[in-house]
Length: 521
Ligand code: KIV
Ligand code: ZN
Image (cartoon, rainbow, N blue to C red; front, side, top):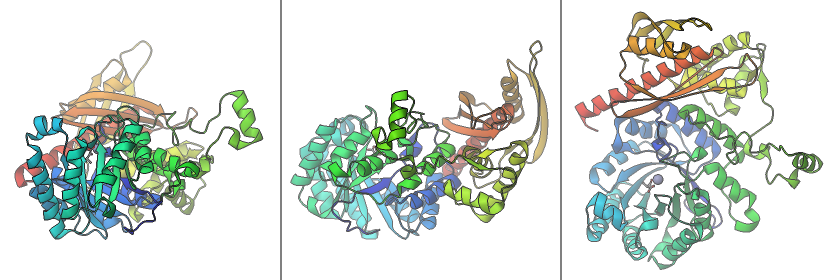
């Protein structure tokens, strides 16, 4: 990636793997992050923030693995303005083709007083020290002033001037709490760019949160006023109400090029596959009315609209579904489809699998195609989610071997389940308020889990009574909150698989914590 981008090109910085993962329940395994990173490269993002290396062993490994996997985008690790964090981040990105460190510290008085308990002088000193230290080992440094939109602009200008002098190449202005209003945020960006000494030597960046639903609007205001990098996530996932949605901001720039005169390097046809992949991996569904990637984004319901679109598409369509990778060709495969066609479809959906994973997915596809006449894209995504993405780099602790459920209108639902737990077979039985309740009780008994079920959602992946059902659940234990997904033509099986998937993820998280406690971060 060239640092010297044309004046009208906006750099797209994707933080799905870092800020996006901070969405409640969105934790991802290392393997899952690698799969997403490969797709982000295909999508054409310029920068991937792969994690916060010092925050956990898992994050460190994710950053390191992503660095080895992707070639073109720059890969960054986040770090607080502390030598320990920066040293860890430097180690994590050491094998990247285009590495970088993203250093941050808060600058608003409210953060200084209540969170950092530091004076402005101390924050300035820490920021300069951190950037200078990082710069000794790494050429590319981005600096962020956390809570910039609620900071005193004069203090921001002072901090930015000094970190630019210390070697920062990109200056990021976060609206951390999603508090800004577009005209205000645009004016702040213009003010900072104009008044910061050395501001003409760096790239200015916007990082907006969506608490008031204004993240995309604020990001657009920022680039309209001179910023040339937008930090965003796929499907807008992220802390609380999320971050700027990549697909929305990119399509706004493309669709309104006549007004903004700005471009990105995004291959927009890869937007929809990437959105599906991230939703599949995180278990966070995309709202049906979500712009660009929601099911209804290109659906015309009112007769008057349908009539208009049939006569001339542009009457009600400002962009085409094809331009974001929605092909309209949803019926894809059946039992006569071969390995090559399946592989091609996987690639189209954003899954660039290894040979072994592809073979496993193909076997599952054949099994499903025997049960179900038409296999849709969503079915294939579910297979990959179930068969490939759930493997957290080590054998699962829990595995479902057998399930039998009795449920009738006048009896008490009961379930018998056999599982493998740490290599040993265990079987048990329980009754419940319904078939799913009975299953969950047996699984809880067999695994002796103390976790609480926080959310349980079920949806049909495709139409028809032979559709695959997809279950997503969130469980909580020992301060961890994880999501699990399961898909099957039998909804009770899908429910059991989702719960077991979540329990396996929980084990992975606990394992990492023990490791860090024993060996340090
Ligand atoms: O929202 C925020 O301020 C952040 C920074 C760490 C960039 O995520
Ligand atoms: Zn953020």
